[in-house]
Length: 456
Image (tube, rainbow, N blue to C red; front, side, top):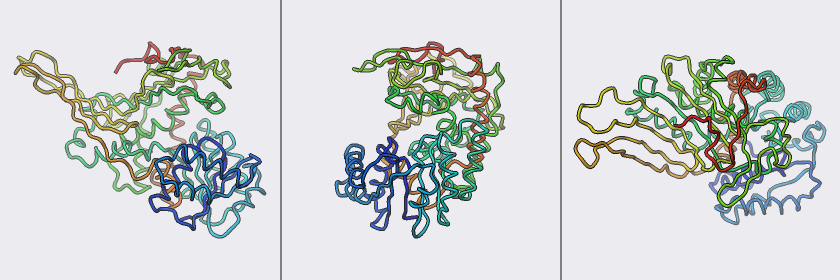
């Protein structure tokens, strides 16, 4: 296990909301001890004490579930250094020391190439690792180049492309439920499943993220990485093991099986839109184009929907719908597996039997199975729902991922060829949208989304 962690971009939102609380959870669970060294670096002209006070305030806000002494221990162990993340000399001074270091790039993706190049010249100690957040590049070509730069610094086994969705308990349950239950795996195919919806609709609007989001949009921010990764776990063939090679090999098989869209496909099978002014709960939300830091000329979408088909024996004939939207009236974050209707219903029943739906709630975590049973009369049918609540995880998603980085377990990391293949899948959509083949719609904040959205 590596006992040295360097977080670059340490005064940003990611460190405040996720990384520092994850470290507190690791400490509380006994995974970190007093030998652990935490160095936080950014361009803010802060002293160590100023950073520790800031870190303490963030932990009190975002890690309230952890004991006070644990939060204090994490804040007190942090050392702060002012550095330009693209300066080789500055980085060399920080990474110098005994033993390998794990470097976490909590930075805007646009400066990943410059930072990786600087780390290459900074002479990282042998055995060091690099973790970086999505998106991995801006398109296929930039992803290939970023992967090339990374392998000049550390071997592929030392690169951790972080997607926290893969560490969410219910995302893991998608894989566990289908592979560990005999009742599901035999029917986990297109003969029985008509459609799979992977949805991340949220009531949150831009929330001050214009600096990143306006240059990305819903397609790159959610569909190209998070939702495609969930699709891989839903659709993959059973791996020989849950080791990093077997699991990631099966995921890349799924990505390679996705049928590339033509322009006509993109017009028929994708939708995009952005929110107008509206009201969500008790708060008024301005139109996206009027949010601070947004350039209306970019026509950035806040809603994206893509329907994909897989050219494989298991999934030919099943539709996979990936959908995400911001500033909607209700949160809906789930995987919905919709089974085909029964082939025959005995004569005499008064209603049609609704198709079964298996839902994996991603946030909050839940599992439900919609069935049909006998209603009040012997010939009437009525819906019947079976519900389960997964046990709470020992660690938050980022805690699991940080522990994997420190231990060198790359099973939940995105491999380089995965990152490139995901861009290949989305490239035709990006191209068609850039040429306005699919007009950008609009929807009021607080609504169910654009009118063109298909129900389901």
